[in-house]
Length: 133
Image 1 (tube, rainbow, N blue to C red):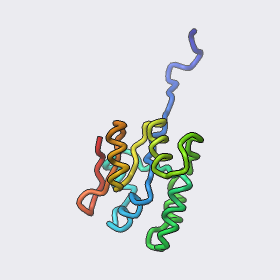
Image 2 (cartoon, one colour; image 1 turned 180 degrees about the vertical axis):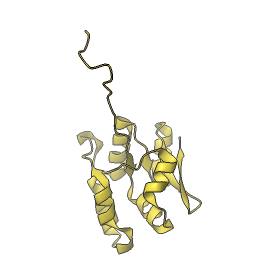
Image 3 (cartoon, rainbow, N blue to C red; image 1 turned 45 degrees about the horizontal axis):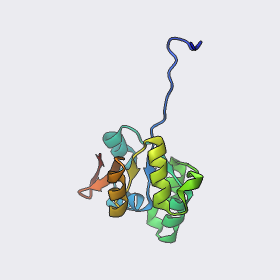
Image 4 (cartoon, rainbow, N blue to C red; image 1 turned 120 degrees about the vertical axis):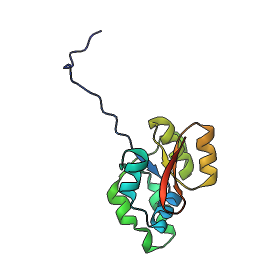
């Protein structure tokens, strides 16, 4: 079945970076310019978060973590209903579904991402980001 799309029609899939609470905290504590570092590392600065990430960051009760900046920069994504209540499970399900990397420094989450062949972004050398996988 042929489509009637114009010759220059393109489907754009918005590539985003999912943000884990510990990944955000590591970026802020290292003083990394998140926009420039993500552009250099992953080619995009578009962020996505799940509500649990905001809850976890707020629970740290540290004003330096700039929760309001994260909320203003990131698209809030509803995790799949079958992903459970644990933040890592929700992020992993979304990463699999959308093929988006996760910004994290959590060793256990990185292990799970590696097993699922999903890339992640981590703070490297306390000064920049690098994508793994």
